[in-house]
Image (cartoon, rainbow, N blue to C red; front, side, top):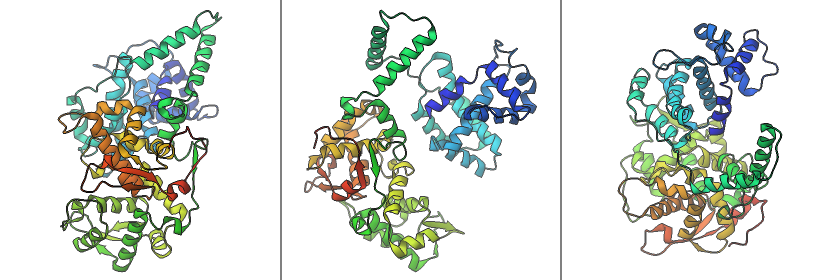
Amino acid sequence: MIDSITQILREVNREHLHRIWEKAKIGEMEGLDEEEQRLAKVMLEHANEFFNQFEFADVLADHPFDPEKEINPFLHITIHAVAEKQIQERDPIEALQFYNAMLKQKCSRHDAIHLLGLILLKFITPVLKGGGRFSLKDYRNLLKKYKFRKPEKIPELLEKEPGPMVEMEIDRENLTIFNEIDSALKDRNFRSVEEVQSFVDDWVARKNAEPIPEFFGLSPEQMYRVLHQPFSEVPDILSFNRNLSKEDLLDAPIVQETMTFLKRLSELQPLKATSKGNLPQAFAREMHQKFSEPSRYDFTIRSEEEDRKLSALRHLLEMMGWIKKRNKKFSLTQKGERVAQNGLSGDDFYKLLETYARRFNWAFRDLYPPFEIIQEGFLFSCYLLKEKAKRYIPAYELSNYFIQAFPTVVKEVRGISCWEPEEEVSRTFYLRFIERFCEYFGFVMIQREEGSYNGYKNFVKTTPLFEKMFLWNIGSTGGG
């Protein structure tokens, strides 16, 4: 997502925009790349508002726009194009959620995009001014916050928001890289800036392809794909088995609970939702009793909201398109009817895994800090299991390896905590990744210490289902 922002911002060169405008106004899009075509369409949408500025963009190349007195039309359309791209690609997903929330509040499509652009601008402006780094985490958090605001109030509220923190310091790792580049450039003669740039690009590409010890043999380039494209762009690392048999899936708790939920709903549908839109109390209590999980307490729930696990499953099944709520009543969809009758296929299980990993918010079920990298890095953590957990291993060792790979996660611990930052991350890692993802999907067995609820001290090892589901194409580094 950050790369796409950078790419589009490069197009803000006004002479370049003028060339795009000349093609756009006569309808000749041929020869324009995807980002240029996006900008062309946005310029046409704003033609009535900024026609003169677009027409003379090459003449205005050096004109400074005073933000106190006038709108910079070129920055305006660039931000608009970035916002459109985020919505189209659902990256980050919070941008699409904010956009849909504005539409539900009777905002026009154009105005909803402009409101998204206002929030985006708040984070891009300090970057353009001072060269800091775009804070994706803070941007996503602000989108979550403002999707519940009234559209007409958002511009005023944004002005009162404190400016985002811009990371300006150069850390030791980056300083080392700069020194290495400087050393590589010494004693070399270049005839042009282009030659220097080409050399540096090649050098960076080689560095990004080198394995990193903290990544257990993965390179930075591979890690980027593991984090951001785990289901589409990692064929050199692994493939997912979409042809598992129903027998392979029988012991996976999420499969058992999904089938119990769907079959019971098929018998009782349509089920009238509560006034808050939740599952009816009797059905929620019945499912709660069947969906037990490790706990020191046994209690009867009064509503679905008191069982976050059940609530999470209901939302997940809605995301899968297997259940629906129409006219305040729950029922199965056609896809859900098929699954309830025939059971989950290997492809169904794969899609359930993809939806849980990429769309469902793992932080929904606990009160720990967001620590979004735990969910984003799920595939790397599975790689850790492959390397280290073929035999029982303490869960905290896995979390330590994770923290070594992503040390900045510790800095996300804020305020007063009962534990040291590393322990809080370890506890969250265990709960979200090991217990509520891996064990839930049947990928690990957990050897629990009797009477202890410090889960991160339990022992973990992979199951046959893990070995069948994750078909690794990358060799072992010798762990496990």
